[in-house]
Image 1 (cartoon, rainbow, N blue to C red):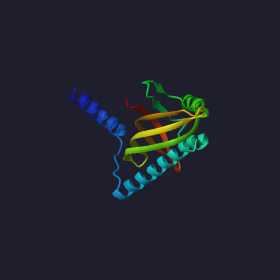
Image 2 (cartoon, rainbow, N blue to C red):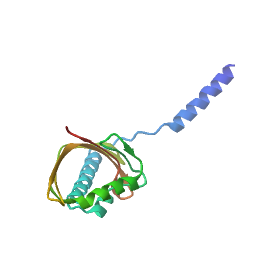
Image 3 (cartoon, helix red, strand yellow):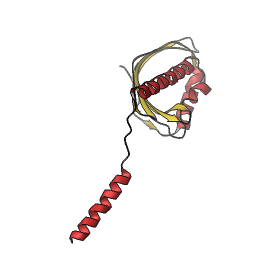
Image 4 (cartoon, rainbow, N blue to C red):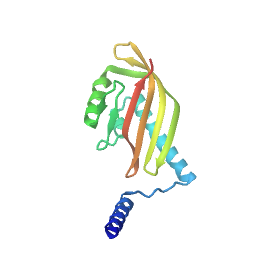
Length: 160
């Protein structure tokens, strides 16, 4: 009986140690470098949005791993579905009169993952000449893929 318990304990210990991940702490310099690189990627994403350059905008996403939580409370697990929705809206927009981000915080999780949270205010001029105002908040999960940081998840909400 004791031998069975000892073997079971040993088997569980081996299994649990195989399942655990080794936590590697980043140096302050590594964390700052990741923070700055993710910030630069975010600024590039913003520039692509402001210039209405869909191709450049899409390059910031990891299409294979993408998922989103939409401001209407729905979830999108397909980058193609996300892209199709964006593509339907883009022809309606003449220009961004303003697009400002505030309260931006980047949290480095590990060497391959960072979370960016922000608030935004925008004035969008439609092809009709009407202006639309939007403000809210967003969360972005950035993942390091090959040589570039890519978005794997976005969430958004609107201010009422």
